[in-house]
Length: 126
Image 1 (cartoon, helix red, strand yellow):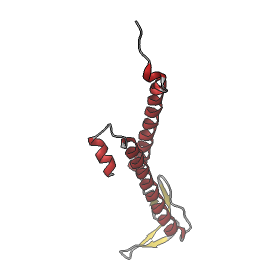
Image 2: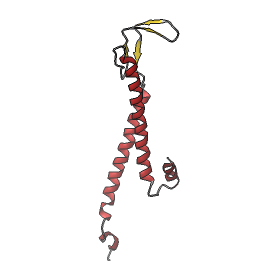
Image 3: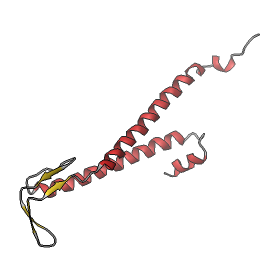
């Protein structure tokens, strides 16, 4: 993150692309690890009752549950914990990654004609 912040002050630095790709990888890792931890804990908790938690929407829990307030709740609904904003985070990470890849491909095509020694020593003769 320090390299990403430093590359914002010096956008032409050699480490700017490396810092952007590294921060994008770390954000993706944070999203996926949170997803696995949340879904694993919810699956273990609800697995005792014989139900898998839904990814989207609601699902009835066919049991009587005693809540923390010591009231009995017959057949409560299990609501997916991830809202639209969480899934939009995945879409935004995908859009950023796609734009970086496309910009890299376009940049390499523009620099392709500059490769080699001939590009350095060419001069227009008039």
